[in-house]
Image (cartoon, rainbow, N blue to C red; front, top):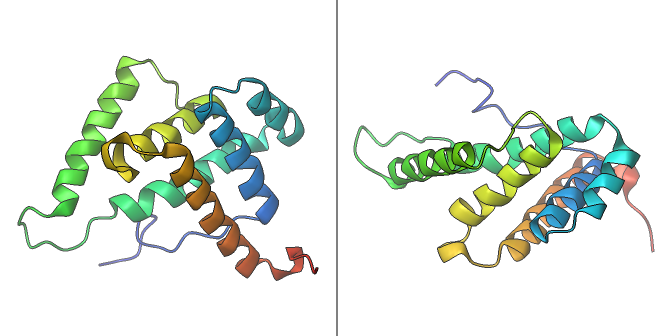
Length: 147
């Protein structure tokens, strides 16, 4: 299969970018309306790109279709779940062009796709943040702090 934006490895984010993006996402998930505004004030228009980077890092590995030779597989059911999620977003008039809309989509994706029976979304978001931070620290070792 030729490499494209879906199959090419994603570039690791900077550690501070991971922290800023997940601060906004986790705050929105917890119904904290003050923190995302503070993060947006500190980050500026860059927050939009950071949230899109997180969305790509979360969505693409989960939705990348492997070769199932035309037979139903886990990805067939995943595609149906994504369709339901997209309809839900459209029904709630979520705007995917702004930072809160992107963060909300990441939260909903986590809730609907990455957790069993809408389990502990906050815990999954913490795990995603930890994985993103680990990848960022490996890619940008100059950001490591020594104890």
